[in-house]
Image 1 (tube, rainbow, N blue to C red):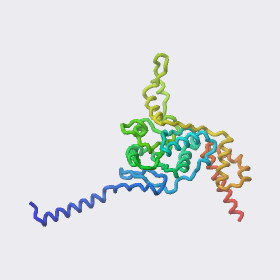
Image 2 (tube, helix red, strand yellow):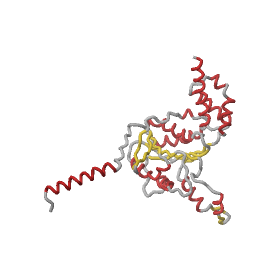
Image 3 (tube, helix red, strand yellow):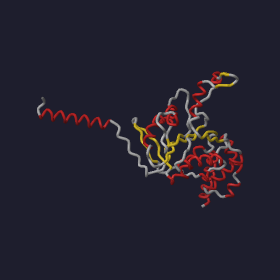
Image 4 (spheres, rainbow, N blue to C red):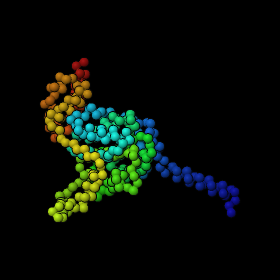
Amino acid sequence: MLNPAALEQLLARAESVLGRLEAVLPSAPPVPDWQAAVAFRWRKRNGRGWLQAVPHPHPIRLSDLENIDNQKERITANTRQFVAGQAANNVLLTGARGSGKSSLVKAVLNQFSTKGLRLIEVDKEDLIDLADIVDLLDGRPEKFIIFCDDLSFEAGETAYKALKSVLDGSIAAPPDNVLIYATSNRRHLMPEYFSENLETCRVDDEIHPGETTEEKISLSERFGLWISFYPFSQDDYLAIAHHWARQLGVAEAVIAASEREALNWALSRGSRSGRVAWQFARDLAGRQKTSRRKLK
């Protein structure tokens, strides 16, 4: 049996070891401050994840998005049902790059944030934490959209299984206050190869896709609402470029004279997307302000 002096020395050494161990271990993740923001990002450090508030989310509005009226109407109706506590679907937005998929999700947040809608952005690499994120949100009074931007999976990746489970495949029912909105350039979120057509078989004059194709389709099918985006025409592209130029304070006379320049800008980029139109408008606005400064 240890004498009091030896016992005291042993306890002191134990406390010293625990102190050094606590310095090495990662600190507990902070509790989300739900009043601090309407948008959050999932962050990870030393294997622990937490929700980081985004104090200044993108201010884009639905009225800023031109020539995608049908897409705006469909996602707005779905989100309105969601914040009202009615049945709503997870949403997959697919199609041409730069056509407004991500911007539409951000605009929906700004439209409905005053009604309790919140947005949580999750990178593809962190999809394995989806179950933990959902647990954090379950029971909250707010309505949460988990946003996965530019989502796609390569052959051999397994993170998509976590997404499938949260969408529709877990033994636990998904919470009523959480939906997933994802954008992708791939309709089925995964690469499709010509060789997979060889797996197709004929059964009583019916064509049945192979197991590989079925596996890929099974992920995108878990999204109840598919919204497709298409390349813009020349007139659509110019209308978007002019809209953003006006928003950035470019004079109407300058906008009217910039049509050929806007088309050349798109030609040099190989795309007439909304993103390219926004980039041209920023360049035009910047050059106009620079010219004004030179005249002073």
